[in-house]
Amino acid sequence: MKKIVYVLSLLFMITACNGDNTTFENNAYKLRNAKNGAEITLGFDGKDKRFFGRSAINRYFGTYKTEGDKLTFGPAGSTMMAGPGHLMAAEREYMQFLPQVATYRLDGNRLILSKANGESMVFERTGKASSLE
Image 1 (cartoon, rainbow, N blue to C red):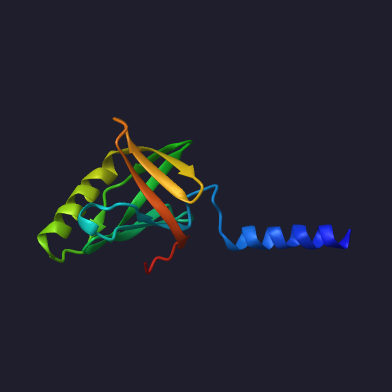
Image 2 (image 1 turned 30 degrees about the horizontal axis):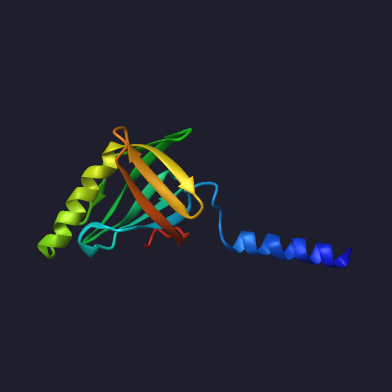
């Protein structure tokens, strides 16, 4: 009996340390296969319903709403730094994608954001969200 309790406790601790994979809120993600090798991140503050991240060159932020599997990003604010053309192009494409997101889906550590036409972007969970990301 002690072994069973120990194993169950260990599994519970491992699950707790890995974070919550049942919601994207309060988690941070990195875009897989970002265009032009850009590093694009996305984090969510579930308490205040805010999103934030790095869009290749600049930092961005805004609010979001959910209803079931529907996800709507509000207008995003961002810093206004310039960078190499190929990264600016990746950033521009990403920032144009966000307001068109219609739904989301979680698949393990992956967050899939999709537009109404089915076009998607896939993100990998990197840990808990931090507003300093």
